[in-house]
Amino acid sequence: MTNSEEYLYRIQPTRPAMLKEGPSEEEADLVSKHFAYLQELTASGHVLLAGRTQNDDPSSFGIVIFRAESKAAALKVFQGDPAVAGGVFQGELFPFKIALTGELSD
Image 1 (spheres, rainbow, N blue to C red):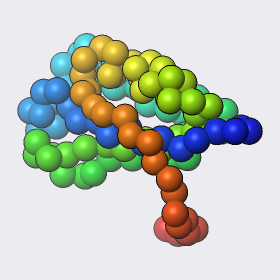
Image 2 (image 1 turned 90 degrees about the vertical axis):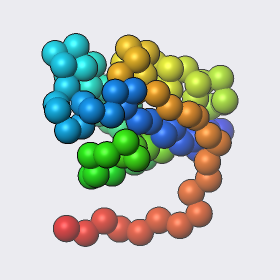
Image 3 (image 1 turned 135 degrees about the horizontal axis):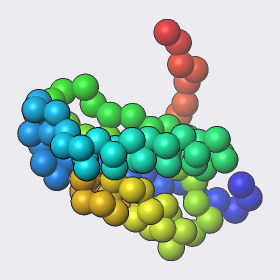
């Protein structure tokens, strides 16, 4: 991607009990669509990193670091996330700049 900028969006479940009690059928469907959406954006070179904390209390959150051509394009990516659009996750979008990276190891 030429002339792209980095962004980060942070998401949290709108119903934190989903993490302990399990998702409803609708929540599970939207989370599945969310994951497929991020896989597609990763394959196309937009998403650089996506993941979530492993705790199951209300402080749990996920992040997506990605590239977009503009703030408007970044907002479209964030708002286009099926779990955000469907109200399963709430979140915030931030301009972001990666300063250091390292290789992942198992």
